[in-house]
Length: 394
Ligand code: ISE
Image (cartoon, rainbow, N blue to C red):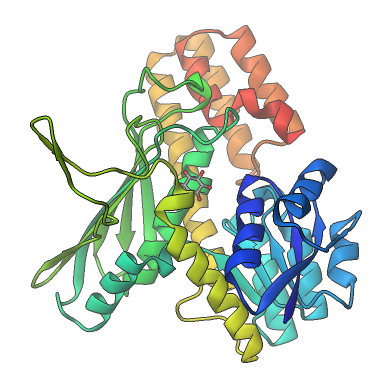
């Protein structure tokens, strides 16, 4: 039996604790940690676990009774526990994204390389979806020839939280698509450009969430892909993918649900969230994680490694840069002379930070900018900084 230490018991984390408890016959959660004690207690209570609550992630990782670690905490606090588990060689599953940017993810890759062993599996679960799996096999078998193009749709019924902002569309949502494109296509991703559609008036997060967004991705062999993100689509959780090859097209199948013929209509239900749309993929990625541990096998191939986590972050970073510039161009076109100079200053400030976003100072500057320059241009550039989220990231 593999003894699992679990870090981060929010909604997604508790779903995984339940999955490990109910479905993985070869693993059990023996320890939990969450900055919110109530979440850790709830994970134990919901699953009637006999588990220790630790007062730090480090204590949990160091406990010799813990054989493997799962990290499902907030995206911005994955790095330290990852470096810790690598240092002591404990197999670790981390939710996606591996970290919040390419430079942090590079630290994870470097740490693994220094140890000479891959111990990290990243939770890019779409790779384990039966539909995507079949597509990967078709492509691998050369059934539609070399890939030329892809068109993807990543729609959420509603934004996942009130603090989900413009940049999350890229580094939390579209990052799945970036990983799938990296997984499916032979070429390396060489560029990504972001475009913004006009805002959906049903978006409850307002200007701090500029979407829908469209990513245009280019590969080293000249292939092209587009990925639409529309995270307030209202009607359900809708994931689509069409791959165009030299001799055919493959499309991701919808999850089969009963067809209902009633009142002059033929209809199918659609999932409302990723928890159920990808339930099988989540189960299978955990099965693989534990199977690798039992077989003393390193992750790779199908399961996303630290390197894959890094690649996805690098693409997201480039997308974020492109998004800032797109918002800037939109704002600059509307700005008067005074606003124009200020916008240029703010853009330079953003760029000088690389992709380090949302530190406290940054958010308060963005807030100030919006307060003093209320109006369309200020609002647009403020959108990228996710002003309403300042509290959350403090
Ligand atoms: C969430 O974190 C996910 O991983 C979902 O698959 C994605 O659709 C959603 O937009 C993200 O917030």
